[in-house]
Length: 243
Length: 316
Ligand SMILES: Nc1ncnc2c1ncn2[C@@H]1O[C@H](COP(=O)(O)OP(=O)(O)O)[C@@H](O)[C@H]1O
Ligand SMILES: [Mg+2]
Image (cartoon, rainbow over all chains, first blue to last red; front, top):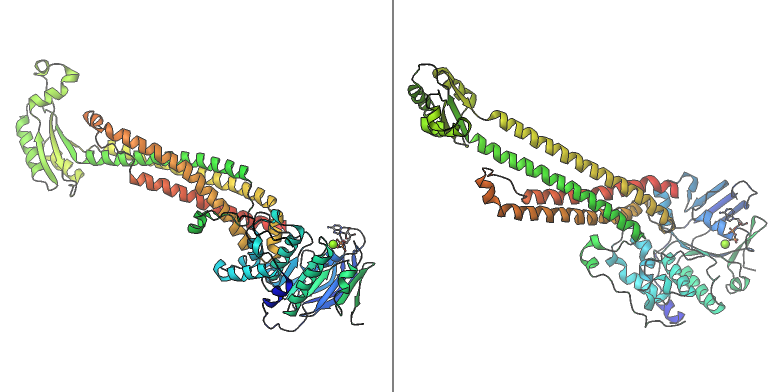
């Protein structure tokens, strides 16, 4: 399975409304009672943009992603998602925001008792869609990430790289406006890392804004012009990447 | 990348394609040991509830048959009144009875027959010849249009001194009280069983949610709402409830059927002893058992759903 074949069958996404997908204003986060892990973090993510979130291990990349995916509430500051202030969010609002983003967890978080196909189809299933309406779509996506032959096995049978691709497919299946990926190349060899990165680039071309958290400098060097959000010393610095 | 197309696909359980109820639980990774224990508890409780319901229904239908039998015949008793010629009184009484609509036949017991009835208590007919023996008139009632018993009794007593009509009312009343009591007992048993099932499911659901914490979290992140998650648990536990209910209720049904077969083969014997009209487990009892099974499933599902809603906030 080559990526060329993959690219040719890439689905095209509908037109996206303009407006920031994510906005942080002076966000601070403290775990428990210690010092702040993140201090005065301000940035925005535009639709269809591509950026890396980087910084040494332990600088707070995962923490920042968890703030975006609403797994954590900021200790102070304001976070807006898709133009909505998240401090005002009720449960239904939270659910509908989450349906607009796809998440690739560092540890995949595939459900062990489901097959690859069922795992990848899950975001559509939980939205109440009938299986008949998405079966072909999911199969196509699985072929696209090179898991067409492993559709009906459980994650226990998959290698690290295959799990990685399954979790990317799951994040992508509902055609999210924003994709968050936490160290998506952390567990794979460099050649697979390159292939996965090209997957993200393709997704971005078809309309999804991408935020990849990584501490792998060589990975970032493969994408010219990608913006870099750099965490260091609890603060976020933005390198435009166009120089 | 290795091509592993040679890996056999996991076979799907064919029944799941036909019946949604038997679909593999997509989300709830259940602990099979807990599930089995839960099924056993529910089965035992359903069995007890179904047996109690069976006993209540048996009592109810038997007593109602007896009531019909009793109501279809009343007796008029004439006590000898000193020197009054009792045969004239009997004629007068029978005339009144025959003239009443709703009375289908009247049979007068002769003096000899009346003595015979008393023989077991008073000795041979010759010994009681001289005694003033009360005389009996058996009155068959048309069940479709029964006469007003109180009015009839009054009419007979007014025109014939010493005559009284016995419509077995005391007995019927007592029988219906017994059957009401049984019904109450069986309803209480059902309520207790459903409550216990509900409680067992509440604790099992809490355990399952703690065990599925990771899964619930992932489901939330990929856009599942609480309703979807609650439905997963509800379905899982409703199926457990129905499985337990089917086992317990099924065992009860088999036992009731066995009683029915045993009972119908000895009906002749019962009739000879004057116990005709004994009700045997019938289709109503089967229907009641099926209803109990469905109720157990419903309660299990609802208890699980409510527990999910009440607990899910604390997990997040
Ligand atoms: N749940 C937590 N409770 C307390 N401290 C945490 C928790 N998660 C992360 N941290 C701390 O916050 C800092 C940033 O962690 P993390 O966001 O995981 O960094 P990164 O993903 O960049 O490696 C680390 O010092 C880590 O120890
Ligand atoms: Mg991390």
